[in-house]
Length: 198
Image (cartoon, rainbow, N blue to C red):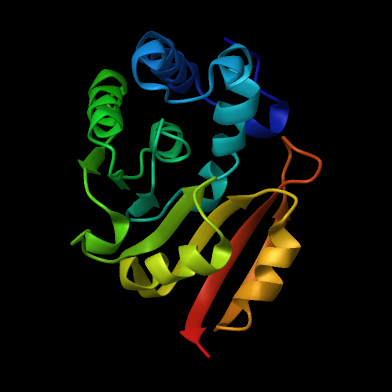
């Protein structure tokens, strides 16, 4: 449990649901390694808060798709915090089982697809998210079929973000807004829209 910064204040009910999620993660983690064992002690700072940064960007949307949801970051956290329905795509069957249990326990409006991103058959959404999954170029390849025409993608990225943007722009025309991370001095959120192959 931790006190959230003022800029990320959530209701008491949301805080309780986040605590339910973290308790479940701690219970499952020794069996299926959802986050590294050294991250468990700092799971609020490293994972929950980092994911919560997307909540104001996704809030008010009809729905979203989270690619490679893994231990539930950012997909489960975003859905708990915003109430926006989400589809989580996670190819690892055991992690998908955890995500389904997390959705049930926290009453988050989520659907879990246990398949590879490129094979997922899902209606495009106005928002696509991903965190710590792949290079930006690879993310964009996966995003295009999942994103509505006027939609936006939000990717949590680290210190390689500039290099990844330079690389991706060789293959893609896109509009990019960069939001500075409030949990990591070298982290950013890339907001990508108007995606088109070069």
